[in-house]
Length: 323
Image (cartoon, rainbow, N blue to C red; front, side):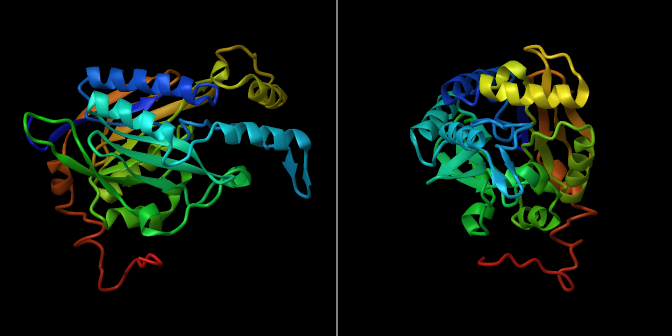
Protein backbone atom coordinates (compact mmCIF):
# COMPACT_ATOMS: atom_id res chain seq x y z
CA UNK A 1 0.00 0.00 0.00
CA UNK A 2 1.09 3.58 -0.64
CA UNK A 3 1.51 6.11 2.13
CA UNK A 4 -1.91 7.57 1.26
CA UNK A 5 -3.74 4.24 1.20
CA UNK A 6 -5.39 2.97 4.37
CA UNK A 7 -7.99 0.36 5.24
CA UNK A 8 -11.10 1.56 7.06
CA UNK A 9 -14.06 -0.32 8.47
CA UNK A 10 -17.51 -0.04 9.98
CA UNK A 11 -18.87 -2.45 12.59
CA UNK A 12 -22.54 -3.34 12.21
CA UNK A 13 -23.58 -4.75 15.55
CA UNK A 14 -25.82 -4.06 18.56
CA UNK A 15 -25.56 -2.97 22.15
CA UNK A 16 -25.85 -6.06 24.34
CA UNK A 17 -28.70 -5.81 26.86
CA UNK A 18 -27.76 -2.12 27.47
CA UNK A 19 -25.03 -3.66 29.67
CA UNK A 20 -21.50 -2.27 29.59
CA UNK A 21 -19.58 -5.49 30.28
CA UNK A 22 -21.48 -7.49 27.68
CA UNK A 23 -21.19 -4.69 25.12
CA UNK A 24 -17.47 -4.29 25.81
CA UNK A 25 -17.05 -7.99 25.02
CA UNK A 26 -18.86 -7.48 21.70
CA UNK A 27 -16.78 -4.35 21.05
CA UNK A 28 -13.59 -6.36 21.60
CA UNK A 29 -14.75 -9.16 19.31
CA UNK A 30 -15.58 -6.75 16.47
CA UNK A 31 -12.31 -4.86 16.92
CA UNK A 32 -10.40 -8.15 16.72
CA UNK A 33 -12.39 -9.12 13.63
CA UNK A 34 -11.56 -5.80 12.00
CA UNK A 35 -7.89 -6.07 12.94
CA UNK A 36 -7.73 -9.50 11.29
CA UNK A 37 -9.05 -7.88 8.10
CA UNK A 38 -6.28 -5.28 8.24
CA UNK A 39 -8.57 -2.41 9.25
CA UNK A 40 -6.73 0.61 10.67
CA UNK A 41 -9.71 2.78 11.67
CA UNK A 42 -13.08 1.37 12.74
CA UNK A 43 -16.43 3.08 13.36
CA UNK A 44 -19.18 1.68 15.63
CA UNK A 45 -22.88 2.66 15.55
CA UNK A 46 -24.84 5.29 17.40
CA UNK A 47 -25.65 4.44 21.04
CA UNK A 48 -23.57 1.26 20.86
CA UNK A 49 -22.58 1.54 24.50
CA UNK A 50 -25.72 2.26 26.53
CA UNK A 51 -28.20 1.19 23.87
CA UNK A 52 -30.92 2.68 21.71
CA UNK A 53 -34.33 2.18 23.40
CA UNK A 54 -36.34 1.86 20.22
CA UNK A 55 -40.15 2.05 20.53
CA UNK A 56 -40.05 3.40 24.10
CA UNK A 57 -41.76 6.62 25.16
CA UNK A 58 -40.68 6.27 28.81
CA UNK A 59 -44.27 6.56 29.94
CA UNK A 60 -44.60 10.16 28.80
CA UNK A 61 -47.32 11.99 26.93
CA UNK A 62 -48.25 15.66 26.87
CA UNK A 63 -49.04 16.63 30.46
CA UNK A 64 -48.36 13.23 32.07
CA UNK A 65 -45.48 11.00 33.13
CA UNK A 66 -46.09 7.46 34.38
CA UNK A 67 -44.19 5.88 37.31
CA UNK A 68 -43.12 2.94 35.13
CA UNK A 69 -41.50 5.38 32.73
CA UNK A 70 -39.50 6.97 35.53
CA UNK A 71 -38.24 3.55 36.58
CA UNK A 72 -37.39 2.74 32.98
CA UNK A 73 -35.37 5.95 32.67
CA UNK A 74 -33.47 5.16 35.88
CA UNK A 75 -32.54 1.73 34.52
CA UNK A 76 -31.43 3.27 31.22
CA UNK A 77 -29.38 5.89 33.07
CA UNK A 78 -27.41 3.22 34.90
CA UNK A 79 -26.26 1.77 31.57
CA UNK A 80 -24.76 5.10 30.46
CA UNK A 81 -21.10 6.00 30.97
CA UNK A 82 -19.26 9.13 32.08
CA UNK A 83 -16.18 10.66 30.44
CA UNK A 84 -13.60 10.03 31.79
CA UNK A 85 -14.41 6.87 33.73
CA UNK A 86 -13.24 3.30 34.24
CA UNK A 87 -15.52 2.40 31.33
CA UNK A 88 -13.81 4.75 28.88
CA UNK A 89 -10.45 3.53 30.20
CA UNK A 90 -11.53 -0.03 29.35
CA UNK A 91 -12.55 0.99 25.83
CA UNK A 92 -9.24 2.79 25.33
CA UNK A 93 -7.29 -0.23 26.56
CA UNK A 94 -8.86 -2.46 23.89
CA UNK A 95 -7.97 0.13 21.26
CA UNK A 96 -4.40 0.43 22.57
CA UNK A 97 -3.87 -3.33 22.74
CA UNK A 98 -5.07 -3.88 19.19
CA UNK A 99 -3.38 -0.73 17.83
CA UNK A 100 -6.52 0.43 16.04
CA UNK A 101 -8.14 3.88 15.80
CA UNK A 102 -11.82 3.71 16.83
CA UNK A 103 -14.88 5.94 16.96
CA UNK A 104 -17.90 4.64 18.82
CA UNK A 105 -21.34 5.85 19.71
CA UNK A 106 -22.28 5.77 23.39
CA UNK A 107 -24.83 7.10 25.84
CA UNK A 108 -23.03 9.56 28.07
CA UNK A 109 -24.07 10.73 31.52
CA UNK A 110 -23.08 13.94 33.24
CA UNK A 111 -24.79 14.35 36.55
CA UNK A 112 -28.27 13.01 35.86
CA UNK A 113 -28.46 14.25 32.27
CA UNK A 114 -27.89 11.86 29.37
CA UNK A 115 -26.41 12.66 25.97
CA UNK A 116 -26.11 10.65 22.77
CA UNK A 117 -22.39 10.98 22.07
CA UNK A 118 -19.51 9.92 19.86
CA UNK A 119 -16.14 8.95 21.37
CA UNK A 120 -12.85 9.44 19.49
CA UNK A 121 -10.22 6.92 20.63
CA UNK A 122 -6.58 7.05 19.52
CA UNK A 123 -4.44 3.89 19.88
CA UNK A 124 -1.61 5.87 21.51
CA UNK A 125 -3.27 8.82 23.26
CA UNK A 126 -6.50 7.11 24.32
CA UNK A 127 -9.68 9.21 24.36
CA UNK A 128 -8.91 12.42 22.47
CA UNK A 129 -12.39 13.86 22.12
CA UNK A 130 -16.12 13.41 22.14
CA UNK A 131 -19.11 14.90 20.37
CA UNK A 132 -22.58 15.22 21.88
CA UNK A 133 -25.48 15.13 19.45
CA UNK A 134 -26.63 18.73 19.18
CA UNK A 135 -30.23 17.92 18.24
CA UNK A 136 -31.89 14.68 19.33
CA UNK A 137 -34.80 13.72 17.10
CA UNK A 138 -38.45 13.63 18.18
CA UNK A 139 -38.99 11.49 21.31
CA UNK A 140 -35.22 11.21 21.81
CA UNK A 141 -35.49 14.70 23.32
CA UNK A 142 -37.26 13.21 26.35
CA UNK A 143 -34.16 11.30 27.37
CA UNK A 144 -31.13 13.05 25.83
CA UNK A 145 -29.91 16.58 26.35
CA UNK A 146 -28.66 18.83 23.55
CA UNK A 147 -24.94 18.98 22.87
CA UNK A 148 -23.57 22.50 23.14
CA UNK A 149 -21.82 24.72 20.61
CA UNK A 150 -18.43 24.74 22.30
CA UNK A 151 -15.28 24.21 20.21
CA UNK A 152 -14.70 20.95 22.08
CA UNK A 153 -18.08 19.61 20.98
CA UNK A 154 -17.81 20.67 17.34
CA UNK A 155 -14.15 19.95 16.63
CA UNK A 156 -12.80 17.35 14.25
CA UNK A 157 -9.93 15.22 15.56
CA UNK A 158 -6.77 13.74 14.11
CA UNK A 159 -6.39 10.07 14.98
CA UNK A 160 -3.17 8.11 14.68
CA UNK A 161 -3.25 4.95 12.61
CA UNK A 162 -1.44 1.69 13.42
CA UNK A 163 2.32 1.87 13.21
CA UNK A 164 4.00 1.01 9.90
CA UNK A 165 7.57 0.39 10.98
CA UNK A 166 8.68 3.51 12.83
CA UNK A 167 5.99 5.73 11.34
CA UNK A 168 2.44 6.55 12.34
CA UNK A 169 0.17 8.35 9.93
CA UNK A 170 -2.75 10.50 11.04
CA UNK A 171 -6.15 11.03 9.51
CA UNK A 172 -8.56 13.87 10.30
CA UNK A 173 -12.07 12.75 11.21
CA UNK A 174 -15.36 14.45 12.02
CA UNK A 175 -19.08 13.96 11.56
CA UNK A 176 -22.51 13.78 13.10
CA UNK A 177 -24.78 11.25 14.77
CA UNK A 178 -27.82 9.96 12.86
CA UNK A 179 -30.14 12.81 11.79
CA UNK A 180 -27.62 15.47 12.78
CA UNK A 181 -26.23 14.64 9.38
CA UNK A 182 -29.31 16.28 7.83
CA UNK A 183 -28.14 19.63 9.25
CA UNK A 184 -26.23 21.40 6.44
CA UNK A 185 -24.46 23.86 8.73
CA UNK A 186 -23.26 21.11 11.05
CA UNK A 187 -21.81 19.25 8.09
CA UNK A 188 -20.15 22.39 6.79
CA UNK A 189 -18.63 23.02 10.21
CA UNK A 190 -16.65 19.82 9.71
CA UNK A 191 -15.90 20.41 6.04
CA UNK A 192 -14.20 23.72 6.78
CA UNK A 193 -11.97 22.00 9.35
CA UNK A 194 -10.42 19.97 6.54
CA UNK A 195 -11.65 16.50 7.45
CA UNK A 196 -10.71 13.49 5.34
CA UNK A 197 -13.17 10.99 6.78
CA UNK A 198 -16.79 11.89 7.52
CA UNK A 199 -18.30 9.49 10.06
CA UNK A 200 -22.03 8.98 10.49
CA UNK A 201 -22.97 6.48 13.22
CA UNK A 202 -26.71 5.87 13.16
CA UNK A 203 -29.68 3.66 13.99
CA UNK A 204 -31.67 4.72 10.91
CA UNK A 205 -32.26 1.38 9.22
CA UNK A 206 -34.33 2.72 6.32
CA UNK A 207 -33.08 2.12 2.79
CA UNK A 208 -33.13 5.89 2.17
CA UNK A 209 -30.18 6.35 4.55
CA UNK A 210 -27.78 5.30 1.79
CA UNK A 211 -28.97 8.20 -0.38
CA UNK A 212 -27.99 10.68 2.32
CA UNK A 213 -24.56 9.13 2.76
CA UNK A 214 -23.85 9.23 -0.97
CA UNK A 215 -24.88 12.89 -1.11
CA UNK A 216 -22.64 13.80 1.85
CA UNK A 217 -19.68 12.04 0.22
CA UNK A 218 -20.18 13.92 -3.05
CA UNK A 219 -20.77 17.23 -1.27
CA UNK A 220 -17.78 16.95 1.08
CA UNK A 221 -15.44 15.05 -1.24
CA UNK A 222 -14.63 12.93 1.80
CA UNK A 223 -14.84 9.22 2.41
CA UNK A 224 -18.03 8.56 4.38
CA UNK A 225 -18.14 5.78 6.98
CA UNK A 226 -21.61 5.04 8.34
CA UNK A 227 -22.03 2.35 11.00
CA UNK A 228 -25.55 1.24 11.85
CA UNK A 229 -26.81 -1.13 14.50
CA UNK A 230 -28.23 -4.47 13.48
CA UNK A 231 -30.35 -5.48 16.45
CA UNK A 232 -32.79 -8.29 17.17
CA UNK A 233 -35.05 -8.90 20.13
CA UNK A 234 -32.53 -10.86 22.21
CA UNK A 235 -30.06 -7.95 22.12
CA UNK A 236 -32.35 -5.90 24.40
CA UNK A 237 -33.05 -6.17 28.16
CA UNK A 238 -36.13 -8.28 29.02
CA UNK A 239 -38.06 -5.26 30.33
CA UNK A 240 -37.49 -3.40 27.07
CA UNK A 241 -38.45 -6.46 25.03
CA UNK A 242 -41.95 -6.22 26.51
CA UNK A 243 -42.24 -2.60 25.35
CA UNK A 244 -41.10 -3.48 21.84
CA UNK A 245 -43.37 -6.51 21.64
CA UNK A 246 -46.47 -4.47 22.46
CA UNK A 247 -45.58 -1.89 19.81
CA UNK A 248 -44.64 -4.33 17.07
CA UNK A 249 -47.63 -6.59 17.53
CA UNK A 250 -50.01 -3.64 17.67
CA UNK A 251 -48.59 -2.10 14.49
CA UNK A 252 -47.72 -5.12 12.38
CA UNK A 253 -49.03 -8.29 13.96
CA UNK A 254 -45.46 -9.55 13.60
CA UNK A 255 -44.25 -12.89 14.84
CA UNK A 256 -42.25 -12.34 18.02
CA UNK A 257 -39.11 -14.46 18.46
CA UNK A 258 -35.59 -13.94 19.80
CA UNK A 259 -34.53 -13.15 16.21
CA UNK A 260 -37.25 -10.59 15.45
CA UNK A 261 -35.46 -7.74 13.68
CA UNK A 262 -35.61 -4.39 15.49
CA UNK A 263 -32.93 -2.33 13.69
CA UNK A 264 -32.17 -3.45 10.14
CA UNK A 265 -28.62 -2.17 9.62
CA UNK A 266 -27.51 -0.49 6.41
CA UNK A 267 -23.85 0.29 7.21
CA UNK A 268 -21.79 1.51 4.28
CA UNK A 269 -18.53 3.07 3.09
CA UNK A 270 -18.70 5.67 0.30
CA UNK A 271 -15.97 7.26 -1.84
CA UNK A 272 -15.54 11.04 -2.37
CA UNK A 273 -17.22 10.71 -5.78
CA UNK A 274 -20.21 8.85 -4.36
CA UNK A 275 -19.23 5.28 -5.23
CA UNK A 276 -20.45 2.68 -2.74
CA UNK A 277 -17.25 0.88 -1.74
CA UNK A 278 -18.83 -1.49 0.81
CA UNK A 279 -22.39 -2.26 1.81
CA UNK A 280 -25.04 -1.41 2.50
CA UNK A 281 -25.07 -4.39 4.85
CA UNK A 282 -28.58 -5.35 5.88
CA UNK A 283 -30.10 -8.15 7.91
CA UNK A 284 -26.94 -9.30 9.69
CA UNK A 285 -24.08 -8.21 11.93
CA UNK A 286 -20.49 -7.99 10.77
CA UNK A 287 -17.60 -5.75 9.75
CA UNK A 288 -17.36 -4.01 6.38
CA UNK A 289 -13.90 -2.95 5.20
CA UNK A 290 -12.48 -1.02 2.26
CA UNK A 291 -9.06 0.09 1.08
CA UNK A 292 -9.15 3.83 0.42
CA UNK A 293 -6.64 6.25 -1.08
CA UNK A 294 -6.69 9.64 0.61
CA UNK A 295 -5.40 11.23 -2.61
CA UNK A 296 -8.89 10.62 -4.04
CA UNK A 297 -10.05 13.42 -1.74
CA UNK A 298 -7.64 15.84 -3.38
CA UNK A 299 -8.58 14.62 -6.84
CA UNK A 300 -12.26 14.95 -6.01
CA UNK A 301 -11.81 18.53 -4.89
CA UNK A 302 -10.25 19.44 -8.24
CA UNK A 303 -13.73 20.42 -9.44
CA UNK A 304 -15.74 20.67 -6.20
CA UNK A 305 -14.26 21.91 -2.93
CA UNK A 306 -17.25 22.85 -0.78
CA UNK A 307 -15.18 24.73 1.78
CA UNK A 308 -12.54 26.00 -0.66
CA UNK A 309 -12.62 27.24 -4.24
CA UNK A 310 -16.28 26.21 -4.71
CA UNK A 311 -17.53 27.90 -1.54
CA UNK A 312 -17.82 31.51 -2.77
CA UNK A 313 -16.48 32.72 0.54
CA UNK A 314 -16.79 36.26 -0.78
CA UNK A 315 -20.58 35.79 -0.57
CA UNK A 316 -21.18 33.14 2.10
CA UNK A 317 -19.61 32.57 5.51
CA UNK A 318 -20.39 30.14 8.32
CA UNK A 319 -19.86 31.62 11.78
CA UNK A 320 -20.10 29.16 14.66
CA UNK A 321 -21.06 31.05 17.82
CA UNK A 322 -18.34 31.08 20.44
CA UNK A 323 -15.60 29.99 18.01
